[in-house]
Amino acid sequence: MRVRGLVSLAAGVLMAVTLTACGSDAAGSAAGLPRASDSAATSKRMPSPAADRFKSVRTYATVAPPTRLRIPAIDLVTPPLDQLDRMPADKSIALPTKPDRAGWFTGGPRPGQPGPAVVIGHVDMDHGPAVFFRLREMKPGEAVYVDRADGSSQQFTVTAVRQVAKSDFPTDDVYAPDLQPSLRLITCGGQFDYQAHNYLDNVIVFASPA
Image (cartoon, rainbow, N blue to C red; front, side, top):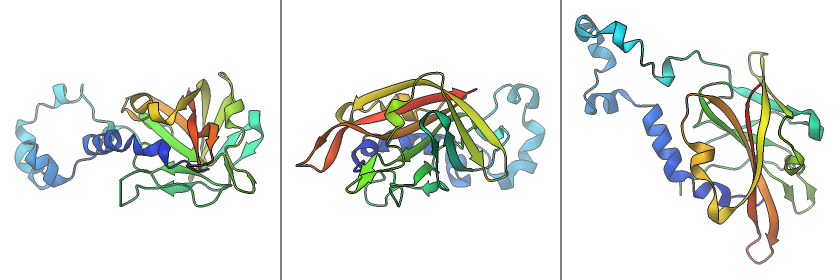
């Protein structure tokens, strides 16, 4: 889909999200928090009633990883989702391996967990349409189903569909951490720049749990 431009602007925010949401024992110690090995020594002086009112995202129930999307409005059932990490060189999100596959960004929440779960797919390739070719046709109120590895399914409802210039990618709207579960589907759109071999815009579908 020629979409590498869609993720480069978000790398800094994604790094911040990851470091905020997931700290190693070493990071916790450096911040003045007890290591896991120190829990017995500190448990007697931890004020549990107050602490219970301020739960970390990591204390919420986990959900199984996503395996595919089903979007009846555009007649789409994806093949198994790729699991996308970051590219070592520039920390941007890797792209799905094939045009007919979408991919879930594993550095963010799983669909149904607090925060924005992000799924990326190609819009087309040199020889025809790709998995998210019809994503731009979606409308608010339409359903997106996310199937999970444990056999469960989470339904989301589209709240907005936006086409934005890659030069003005809404990083905070897409990736900023939140305690409310949400889903973001991203592909390319708009005019194709034949000189740069890339689309100038992104199409972003925003969805919330039904």
